View 1: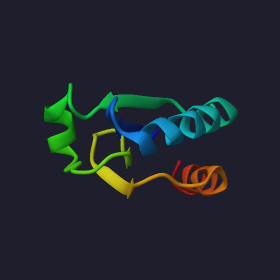
View 2: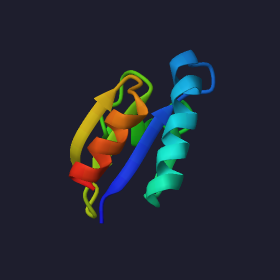
View 3: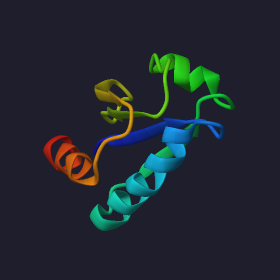
Length: 86
């Protein structure tokens, strides 16, 4: 099973706009998303080389990144991504 990590910050405007899309897609698909504040968990952000937010990382069971996308995306694109990789 893949892990979906959503990196954001509390002050990021695009993060605030994209988070409801991520939440809706997670609810519709049943895919669990781990929401991570890149400022309060800098170690995890560094581990996945997150330098901009919002960033979605899809990782395998061992935690290795399989896919990364920085910036918001339309709901349809996110659904397609999770269905393809997930």
